Length: 310
Image 1 (tube, one colour):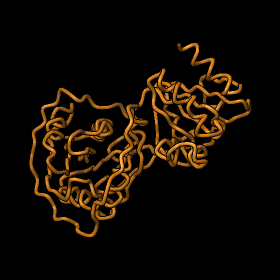
Image 2: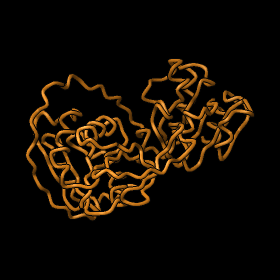
Image 3: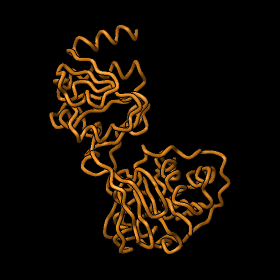
Image 4: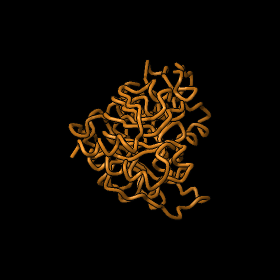
């Protein structure tokens, strides 16, 4: 049977997380179909047809699908679910909102944040804040999976020749409605997709002191992040939070400034290619996972680093 991927998009652009999810779907076996539930989303459908490995793009277009309400998107997926052995979505806020509803309606177990596909019915997922990996096997007729996108390379966005098929939109759920969306606007790359991430912790000391990290991110063209401690202290907004209860990142370079390295934070950065830690405490747990560590006062080290970068 075929595999269904629920696309994440904003009716104009396809989110990069969908490409990583397509790669995971390919490892499950079978033809890959991409479901686009939205409104006036022809541009998204056109982009989806070019994704390498996608055989068919299903488009459900209706005004009440425009804002990605989980109840409507889930019902749309359920309306075609009988044709598929697997249903996948990114382990983003979107996927985490939609797929549990799909699994419940299908009366199957969801397997969350898969890290690896061993076979069509066997997957790896992290447990205990990423300190252990569980290999789980599902006997459900339909496997419902969210995908930790940092663990799968993105599928090529070009080279595909998928066909487009319109499907009937399900009826509006009617018991929820879209009110408003507040989108943080920034010229910086999004945290999950950034190649360079500069993150600060409680050790930075204040919102004003984060300006040093802002300057470093500007020099390196990176995104800004923070530990939960820094977010809870009010130094930075909560959409900067990295870790088990925040965003999962896998940049080429991760610089942790004044971050102690609690396991909940480390769970969100384990896939980073190179981790640099700056902390005045030589016993800080962050040094156990860092590729390079600098023991010292960040207020002395960062200005020196900025000077060297010019």
